[in-house]
Image (cartoon, rainbow, N blue to C red):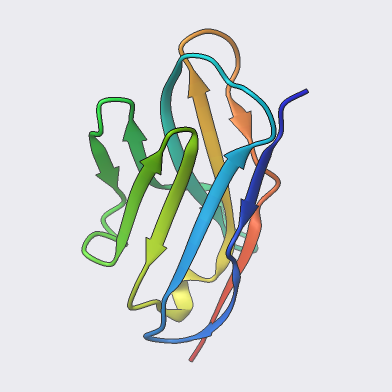
Length: 114
């Protein structure tokens, strides 16, 4: 069974940067879109950024101008700059194939200290 493996999380001071990456452990055919979500304690999961096969991107208003999603083959990245304490959350990647159910990663913790 294919899993999504995330890396790059950690502890950083406010104003700092982190780069997250997510790769599948095997082949996923016909990917439609890839995305990053985040979930903070006691809050609902929220969409952070998406990127389609055609390269179109979309961002949550709270991260526009600070985060950049990119993709290389089947790996998706999230470059996070000017981090704020409110960005603290577990970040999860998601892969949507054209056919079948989406794949979710286990998540990587990002903690931003003030």
